[in-house]
Length: 570
Image 1: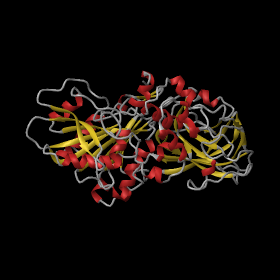
Image 2: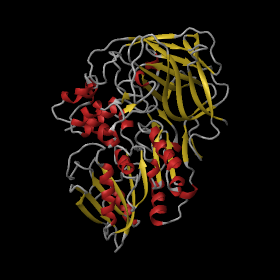
Image 3: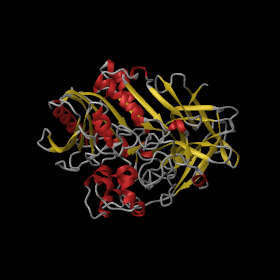
Image 4: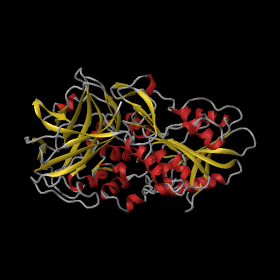
């Protein structure tokens, strides 16, 4: 009984992004044969329900499969018409424990084995010619990647939209817990009825390891996720365990610079290209990255309109993809660039052969002392300079303002003025650029800092500051101090001791235009995207006490804090 507004954000925004940007409404045409709730047996005897659309004719036909936890479309589904008319069978299956499928719903746990078993069952049917393609977005992109290492012999191609391959990366980023995504989405798909106001209040509940106890309905996995802050066997069973060498299937990944899975959308393709044991699979990994949030194909993300070119027809790309791999029709797929990237600011698409781009000049932009007001940002290294301080109070965290979010807060590009006015946010600006400067690739912040706490967080955000005073976020990151040296071996801080921190700001592609400034924000919270570090050093998820911490950011000759930008010569 989720309220409609929350249902839209938590369920439909992790959608069945299928063969087009939006699902088309319409009546099924004569000649399309529809079967509802066909039960398919899995290896343990559990039966999963699927709806099947078949074209006219005796077949057999290639099949496009979609495995979803969000419900199945009915016989009126418009996309079925497009593909059955073209000679495909469409299969949409409820994941285990969802819809009409048997078994218990435990997100991520069974999708690898169930996906393989489903493909094997379909491949044996008389209406299937032995060739299967997969599609869908978000969790439905995950169900594709989950079954890809050592895939069924019938799987010939996949087209995941805003996908991921390891659920641990959803839960923990730089050691911090992605609170709004995991608890917001997890509660929604667990059937917990919360309004946006109730969810906002729930995000502040402590301790996190009893987060689920505030709800009447029991959702055990909400507790499980907090009890496993490290990459252990629990998470290995809920991901492909980075087995990219075992992926031998052509893939077309589609994602957005402001999507919650922006980094992993690219990394999945890159990793298979680098390590698959199959040469053809290495060659046939493609990625499309637009200026989008979780809903791909739109021209607007947050407060910015990226122009008509941003509204790419994803459906046509996917149709060409399947026509080539499942029908052997020449559609130009083999001429596609490995990376098709939308360069924000310039607002144009460009094809590239690799990621990062070979011609990248990784350039250090150093934090410097203030010239007036805020700190400065320059390519010249600092000398003897005084550091900057702020107080991080976890009871009053910096609010998430746009960015790579999905549930519980805004996503996309937003003016950061309200955030930058806070005393616990340090702002560093370059001088106005004398000429355009393109930044396309992975972005990192190397920070030298000290804290009065035993554990704390440091955050960094890359911002494009416009001449009119508006400043729009591009990418951001966080590091939990106890994981600063080794993600597998947490170590608390010595209060007051200066240490280096590397903050991964993920990825972007942006043209900073002449007259704009490069800006970076440094702070210690980004809430509710990430959980608040209580600064106590208590074991994760167990504490209710929160204390303030004084943070010192250094930028001198011995401690040259700097942003590393992937600059592309033009």
